[in-house]
Length: 93
Image (cartoon, rainbow, N blue to C red):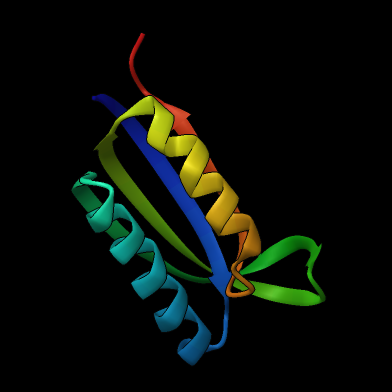
């Protein structure tokens, strides 16, 4: 398992944010991903509109995951309408 940083931007609507966050955490749990840190960064204005949204709710995670699982997450996250953008970064050198 490798260490990753994961930042996700949800639709700023509180209902959509909660649904998206529940989807992300349940997806991680079923894949056996260990979340070591979760930080709610709040609602911020986006530099440019994403999916016709001016604001997004940012959430940051530090996690331990299998590299093959990351590809599966990306497929699911692309299809979720509550997720505007996301980024996985491998923190190991």
